[in-house]
Every structure is written in C-alpha cells, then in structure tokens.
Amino acid sequence: MSPGRVPGILRLLMVGVALLTVAGLSVAPLFVHTTLPRGDDVGEHVQFVQDFSAGLREGLLYPRWLTHANLGYGAPAFIFYPPLATALVASLHAAGLDLFAAFRAGLFFLTLAAAAGAGLLGARRAGKPTASAAILTATFWVLLPYHAVDLFSRFALAEAATFVFLPLLFLALDRRPQPHLAGTAAAFAGLALSHLPTAFLSAWIALAWVLPRGRRGVGIVALALLLGVGCAAAYVGPAVLERPLVHADWLEGNPIYRFDAHYLFFPSHVQVSGDPVHPDFSGRLNNPTLGWIRLLVPLTLGLAAMAWFCRLTMRRPDAPMDPLHRYMALALGATLGMTRLADPLWRWVPGFASVAFPWRLSLFLTLATALLMAAAVTDLWRRPFRRLALVVGMGALVLVLGISLRIAGSVDWDTFTLAHTETPVVRLRVSGALMPRSNPDMRGFRRRRPARQAVLTNSRGEAVGVVYPLEIGNQRRTYRVVVPAATEAVLSVPQFDYPGWSVHIDGVLTPHARRPPLGTLAVAVPPGEHEVVLSFGNTPQRTMAALVSGASLSLLLALTLLGRGRTMGARRSV
Image (cartoon, rainbow, N blue to C red; front, side, top):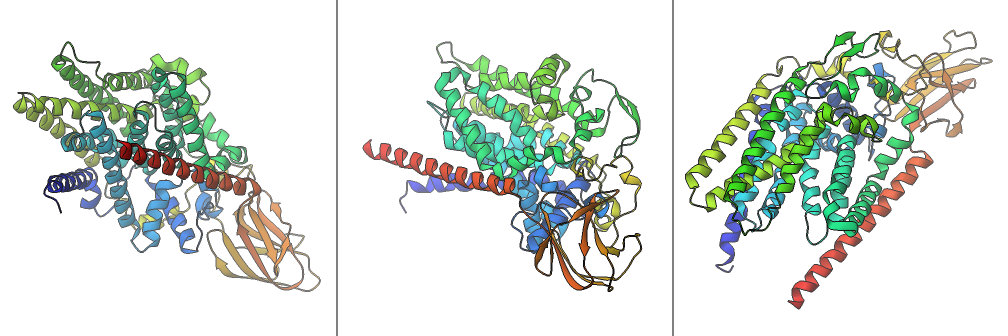
C-alpha cells in the first residue's frame, strides 16, 4: 500500500463511522424502547409487513394481496401502496428477525443510506469535496426534526425511504454541464417505489430546477423521469390503471385529506360525518403531527436563512454566484407551497390535489437547510472563524437533536406491544381506500363481524357438505370439499373478489362468481369430493407492466455502463 493512500482510507473510515453514529442517533429511541411508537400509521405498516413477510415465506417474489386486511376479507394493498420500504422490513422479518426488530433494523438501514446519499450531495456541493462537508450534510439531513416527525409521530415507513433517494436525485440534477440521465432516472424510480406523492412533487421540482440549463437540460430530465417511471412500472402501472377498481373515491372526497385543511396557517375547517373509518368531526385539524410541523417549518426555514446569510456576508465581491442560492430559493418555495398563498397551485394544477398534504414539501425544505447549514459551518471553519463555526454548528446540532428527541418522547411508547399487533384492530385493520368495489357496502362495512371460514351452501342458502382447509396462504387457498350427492352447492370463500383471483377444481380452471352482499369469492362445486384451489396472480396488465420494468431497467443499466465507459476513456486520454 502506498503511503499516499493511507490518509484517503482513514478519511473514508472517519466518514463511515460518522454516518453510522448520526444514523444511530436519529433512530436511537427505537432501540431504547421495547415497543414501537404509536404513530399515525403504525397499525397500517405493521399489518402490511406481517402479510408481506408471510407472502415472502410462501415463495412469492412480490406479494400484492393482504389476506387479513378489511376484517379478514383481504385487500389488493400492494397494487396501490409502494412496496420498497415494506419489502425491506418484511424481508428482515421473513429472514428470522422478530417483527419489531425488523422495523428497527429496516429504519436504521434506511437512515444510514439517507445519510450516505446526503453526504455525497454535500461533498459535491461544497465545491472541493471534503469529509467535513459530507459529514455535516448527512448529520443535518437525518437529525433535522422533520425526519423525527416522519419516524416517530407519523411512523411513515414509506416516506422514510424517500430520505434515501431525494439527495441522490439532486446529486444527479446538479451534475455539470448537464444532468446525469441514468442517475436521475434511478433516483426517481426509487422515489416512485417509495412514495408516489413525493415522487410527483419531485418531478415538478426537478423540471423547474433545470430550467436555467435550457431545452437540453429540461429534455434530459424529462427523458430521465420517463425512464424512472418505466423502471417502476411493475408498481406504478397497476396502481394507476386499477385505481377505479377500489374505493379510492372515499379518500379523494374525504375532507380530512383535502389539501386546504393542511395548510400551515389558516387551514380550512373540516366537517366529517358518517365516515366509515374516521369519527365525526367538525373544526380545524389539530393533531400532534400537524402541531409539530407548524412549529418546525419556521424553525427549519430560520436555520436555512441564517446559514445563507452567513455565506452571503463572507462572499468576496469578485466571487461567482453561489450555487447554493438555488437551495435557499428551494427552501423559500417549499415553505410558501405549504401556505394558503399557494392555493391556486394546489387547486388548479393537475395532480397536486392528490398529494393531499402540502406539508410534504417539508422534505425539500429539510434538504435545502441541511446543505446550507453544512456549507455555512464549513466556510466558517476554513476562515479565521473557527470558534464561531463551532458555536454555530454545535448550537444548531444540539437544538435539532433536542427537538427530535422531544418529538420522540411525546409519542405513546407504552401501548403498541407485540401482543397488540395480533389484536383484530391491527391484524384485521380496515383500509378504506384499498377496499375493492366488489363490495358496494363500504360505509356499513366496519360494523360487520370479521370474516369466517369458507362454507358450502345449497340453492336455499343452507349449509351442506364439509369443507376442509388444507392450505390458507397469503395468495393461495386450498380446500378439500365434500358435496353430498344430487346437491347443487356453492363454495363461498371470505375474500373479496378482485381481478387476479382464479379457481381450479381438481386442476381444471373454473369460472367463479361474486357472492352478495360483500362481493366475496364464490364457485359452484359438483357433487363428490374435490380439491379446490384459489390463487391470486397477475393479470395481462400487470404482466405487461412487469415487462416494461424489465426493459427499462435493462436500458438504465446499459446507459450506466456506457456512461462509465465514456468517463474512463476520457480519463485515459488525459
């Protein structure tokens, strides 16, 4: 080993240790407690991971059907819900970790990857790449309080994954002289597989970000976004095309999810009555998550403004324009987008209303603030202001870490135990927006009893014969059915009918029907003893979407290898 390489290796080790440390600090409350925080979405994600991991154990590569959802009648959850973060946690659970340990490990890995991506972006934005810029950017990115809101107050597993890909997206966008096509496509595909609303916002911001590059820059990014959608088509295609098959109208028409009810200041009043999932309510929404966000957005913007002002005062008159000015503009734009001043944008631009929560823009504000704070502290340290750099950097870190820990401490950690995860309120959780339209009675559904076993009935609705369950899996059910002689019997299975279900009797594909009033699976069985197999699989649309993903990933890989080849060739020529 040459002596010149030792400092580089030591620097790499130092950065690695720092990233592990800040990631550990960010998720430390998860490891201190033996339970999970009772965040807004914890029940949903626990249910998702339980059934997804069961599907993985059964040998399914991409389980789409949750057999226990909706009181045990099932839901096509992962046709519509992004799979990436859930697949990570479910894989750890299927590999042998207990449920809560899988969540802790998965969130730690996501936070570590987020810190690494932010470190790469921070080093690039510092002009001359330095370990200090990388470490500081990563530290602020995962310790600024919005990350704690997502982890603990909301327990938003899907959005925790977006922290990994957003820095990588801006890393690709900021490449000179033009954005990196393959990098932008890969980062956007990751965002789409993590959380569609964030991916939607990122697409608009990415296009606006490269407007100064002219038509070529905008064209590259537009092409990259299309390629990213293609890579994620196995999920995005069915999620878009099959949306009319579930009760998505309940979510879209629910006043609780209206964008104007979630503005930071002067939100609209909400009137909820007779909702199948939420209790009756009248007034302005004011839950702990919204309270924290309304406090944190001005604080985060204040830190960004302070850092920007520091860089502005230290700038030499003859220096070129600071590229981080654009990140200050991003911070201001994201903040304004969360207020009623941006109402025309949310109301009239297609697709924005479906994002539901304007405060999702806090993610972009947080990234801009992390970069600005890291750059300001690094610049102060390089000049004769090292003590000031220490005061500013340490003061800001103590402030954000203290608030993040306060957010974690304000959440209920006592009631969501492992035993609670097996209770019907969690295991059989009703997912309103993921209920198939085969069940027309959505509003009265929650008052029903949980699903029972499959039964055989005659034409008068009387129970006949015997049903022996042989296999009850996530997407496959096998029964041995005995039907008395000279009896017309129908096997009723307590799972909602949905495209993708097929029935085989003694190995022969058999048409099935919907049993009213819930639209569950039903199939006529002839007299005698038979084996009935119900399985949930792909439709032609889902198969086509998977093929598009495969082709797009092949193209992305080819572009990546081509780009590396050109870079290596250019280096040799120098």
